[in-house]
Image 1 (cartoon, rainbow, N blue to C red):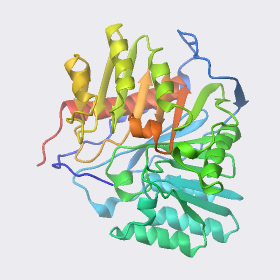
Image 2 (image 1 turned 120 degrees about the horizontal axis):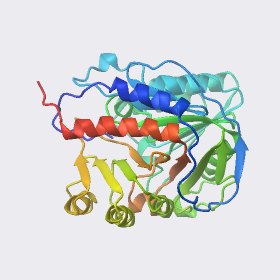
Image 3 (image 1 turned 120 degrees about the vertical axis):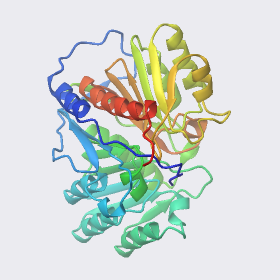
Length: 391
């Protein structure tokens, strides 16, 4: 759902930064880690492939050796007639390649483009399944949600809801047990064309096995949140030489993993946070700042002035933290560490995300991917430093 604030003029994407991120993803050498990797167990090696494809008008994408990561590019003034060429079209293209299976777990769902692609996949014989939050399934006021759900249900696609107070907050898709899409992006019009979001597509059977295992716990076993059994087939995967750790909350202790990696920082920690209320993560950032690490970030403005947010505490400690300058929501949940490690997914930096909600988290060691997220951070920060005024 979108919480509106006073609209301001939003800038276009910084082309130079995006070009730099693309170049970094292709030419940065393997410099080696300046610290010892925290032990997260053995990894499974896979080659990995990128999806390719041109950059569309309403999103910016960076293609690496084994991934494609894309960011929404909100524009002001908003014109619904221009709501095309966004992340939804990337997802539709991914769904269109499904031959055997398609599993969709998403918190908010209101895109007819995606619903139609799911229905067409089912019609051509693909086994399509969906998990969502009860609040989405029972939404009666949003006509877009109703229409999208009607399309999916009309195609005979089974939908499982969580039926509980905490939320099923995932935003991931698994295609043919081989392709994974995940990130902060909900499948809604606002999250696609107004809010700041990210999504990544990875080809990896080992990583897909982890997301499929999580999906089965919800769809087949009807278990959610703390009731889910722990354990993943491949907690650590190596894709084209890049280390990828995947975690699912609450059983995998996502906050502990985030804190563990923040503690490795030697140069800088940059973050973008929709909701940042977790004291432990805030403590880890303060400790690194006291050790001389450059810790800086941008908070979603809504809620950041409350007593629960870490914004005031970090600001008072002298850290370079800002409230975002977007007229809509900064929906990222991202931390970039030492230009190599990227922490991202559906996981907000909060106790509810850590202890109650269904969440997923990726922690990736890849300089090119980190450069892409750093470019997005710099774009978001530039808008926060100098928010344009509505004309």
